[in-house]
Image 1 (tube, rainbow, N blue to C red):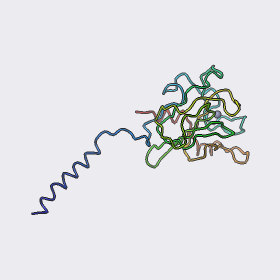
Image 2 (tube, rainbow, N blue to C red):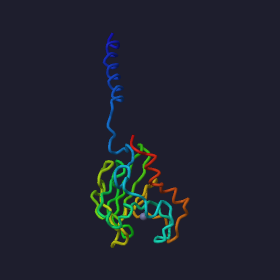
Image 3 (tube, rainbow, N blue to C red):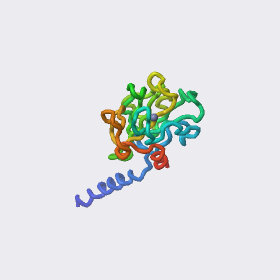
Image 4 (cartoon, rainbow, N blue to C red):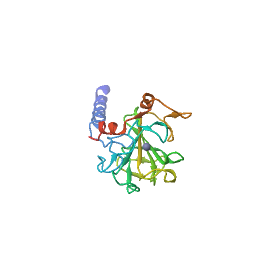
Length: 200
Ligand SMILES: [Zn+2]
């Protein structure tokens, strides 16, 4: 007798717990809900990669350029100070300075519980987030700058990485450039990746 009546509350509990799964849940910030462009509107409108493209040979660094250089075409240095946006939800794993890149922000983005990519923003004029901050897609994280000692004309150096590397990672070892093939094992084509992973 007792066993029979104990079954009813148990069945109700199972029903309640299983129905929770079907309630619509907002995407938590630790997970991405798609990627937007890092400058301009969410589609990158008004901006273009007019500097080095992904895997162009960089004479300045004697290596294959592992990212894209974004500008407002024809603006010269007038795009200095323009906002730079987080391309997706994520965690700021580095916000600081290094002598080669100037102000840098590196963000980890979880595609799933087990799969991540990293976006990196360099030569920034200002950094507006700190290491450890959780950011959402389209949050302003800094502004476009000219790199250390105004070394460059104003542009955003932007990378998407598929491996966990330090902020100052560059595809070169002891002054020797990595092959393009090896660079592709660590870095992704930024524009292609964003186009293939837009928010639904
Ligand atoms: Zn660059």
